[in-house]
Length: 209
Image (tube, rainbow, N blue to C red; front, side):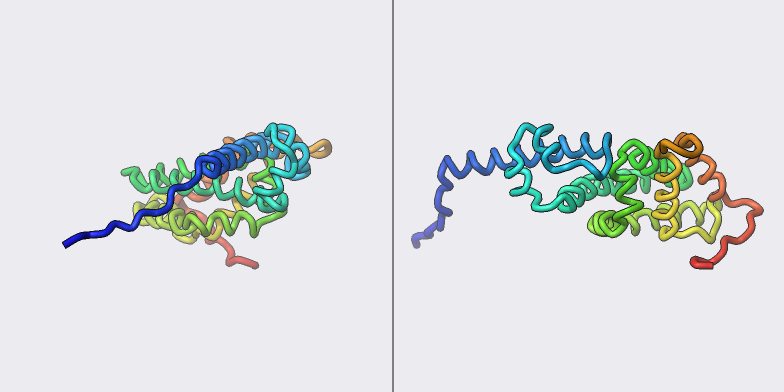
């Protein structure tokens, strides 16, 4: 009995090269955009990103038709990384320390990446979409439940509170020309974490009250 194997047609070498070039260009664009946005914020123009990445502006638009598409791709990368941190934190035998480490990483990234800080404040839906793709809120909820079950965390804190805390941190740690000096993200975080410890604390008001 003869068995016939159906083989896929060979991909032309020119097409393979084009695909490889496209992947390299996308990687260069994302790297340049991450640097430009982190330093200058959401006002960066696509032309600036094209110059920084060494490609034509048309190439940037072929990969990312609008600035929001580029920001979404960067947010997706950031939140995927945070989801990995959350999964690692779930392996920590100390539930409070696991939660604290995720919050420290979230706070550091928020404070050091100006575009993400601005996006959390001005484009919250963009960050929500990125977080939902990697189940970050669910993973954070698991960390919170572990910390509460251990008795280390106050019982009325929920994962839904975390985005608002990070937005507050973003506002407090971004320098402004007028007004009080920006607070250190590490100091802000430790004050915030202190309030989440299980102690003789006043109950938290309900959302919206």
